[in-house]
Image 1 (cartoon, rainbow, N blue to C red):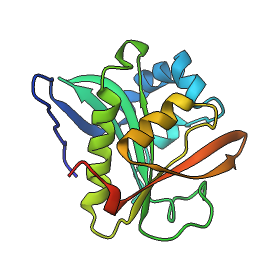
Image 2: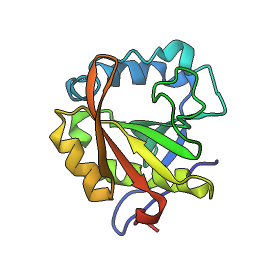
Image 3: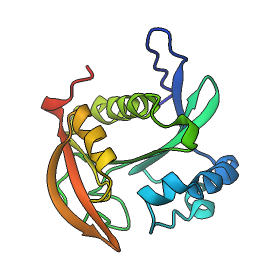
Image 4: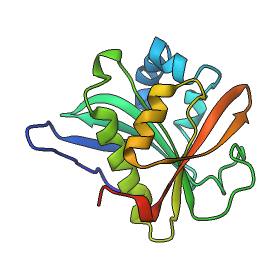
Length: 177
């Protein structure tokens, strides 16, 4: 899919572009930010290797606001991804990882706009029935964020060392369109 702009009245344009090996230093920097570590403390993204790969089951994207990178997201098909992170899941789901890179960009509505763009991408495929997300169980702020968007709590689940809540947004409950 090509760059996807999104604007709101009086807001600068936001778009998503593919993450590339040229983003390695930026992503390493964001990975070291306290708010990113707090939300994802135990994952090693393996940026050097992963930015060079483009499997059919994944998109890694940089969100830009007026050409300034502000965040990262990964959209996967959890039934096909090679680590089987989500376990045995049905076809036609997507899962999203999303974060804002710099603390100064938190609380400004950018995450909501990024999620809108991500959900638009996910549900552009008419076969996709729902989207999953897995914030830490302790990340109450993220839970409220996802619930405002329309995600519903599904279960508490352990992923590796992380105690997470799994939330799900059904196509029928998708409210952005």
